[in-house]
Length: 306
Image (tube, rainbow, N blue to C red; front, side):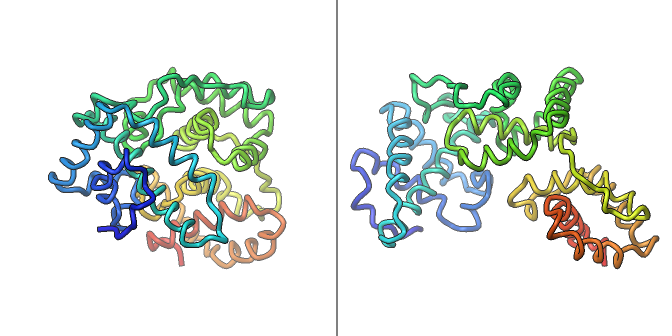
């Protein structure tokens, strides 16, 4: 149980404290869907909070309070700053898991899928720079696919039409060489706008579907290491997109291909050559080197690389 002083927490939201405290344990809190680890009695606490939120119409007001308080964060006032961060993380856990429970059809959450939404909210795509306007239509369609279970379901049932539609987007990003500019824009905006987040999640689907959209420079890679290029882009982008990739198992077909890559490296005895390339070019070709490093780390965790 978290030991927070709730004195400064608004009186009108205090009925949610037991539900927020459910998510404190670190082993639970930092998972995308910690509700899957909870016992029935804990789920019952969340269910009661969901029903009360829906009845009182407090969901949007709570998310608005969280955003407003986040703007007050001040590292010079450590105690207050730390309190706001802790409470903010617990509210974020509550919001994220209510949404995930709803997406999984668990009641009463599924009965109130938009309990935290602004009833008057409308997406404002004017926030998106004109040069990236071609991302708007696919982001509107696919940008709501965000949680692990949603992504898994989409990948399992994706149609050829959907794949083709997203492949066109990937090709547009690649032909315009927009990958780095889009990434910089996403970082600068901080994903604070729903429109920006939807574009980010749509791009995540391109990675999950292994649709290439980068224009990396592998010209410095020695000829004998040329076989590394495609798998490095493939696995590196997949892994780098998942902040907690160490906890997320790769799909079976990716594990098989990684095993084949590890075998190829060992057969050619190329571990030393890869290390030498990395040491020489990492400072100059950061993106390419990062993809190499991430992929080799994955191989090492699978005990497929020396």
